[in-house]
Image (cartoon, rainbow, N blue to C red):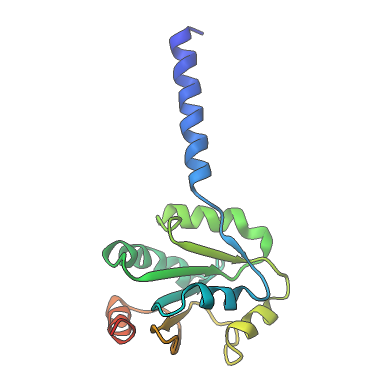
Length: 161
């Protein structure tokens, strides 16, 4: 192998590893994480999107969420994957594919998913996708099911007043 080819190969490996490092894994969502999210976003409107790798509607919605993020970068979007801790690699691949790794991402890190769901919303029974819209006073509106671009826009009008 020539020195030039070896150098090119090593440069490729370096760039590939830097790209992997830049794509941070989701934060571990455990008991108390929901309150942490609320505290770190005090006086700021945001959207919390709860999804799963096993939810076909959630996966179809990813492209729209990516588009919304690109068109409204001022809107804080937080993604929470409601999957078993063993799905971390799959979660990361989906986020990368949809260019959603640069936003705040969380993933369940506790096998007691019902406890985590209850902390988020005692009236939520785990149906997905589930999206919460928080205004700056953290009055929230929870919506289950797939939303259209128009649905998102209407909710943004409410929370960004």
